Length: 121
Image 1: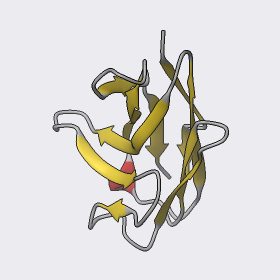
Image 2: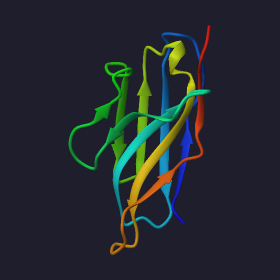
Image 3: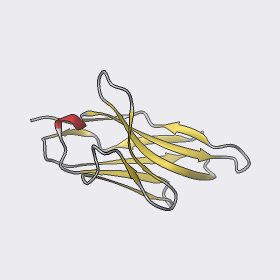
Image 4: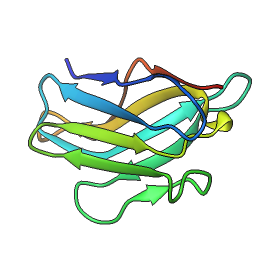
């Protein structure tokens, strides 16, 4: 059974940095896109950043220039480096991966359990 496990959340002051990591495990033939989403209290879940297996990344306008998404295909991991954090970045951050397994199957969406990021002075 495929599983996504996030780590790296916590409490940080405005202007600080955090690094989130998500590791995919289980029976995985291939991983298509990997993404980070977030959901603040009372708000809908929103896409923060997305990275395909190869090629260019995609960021929400609110995090461009501050967040960087990267992935290690050999380790099936995706990272989110968050710099210059703002109060409005406070949310639960979720990892998402689009996975194909077995090789003849269709792509499926998988989610991590979420990790809390709190930006507060």
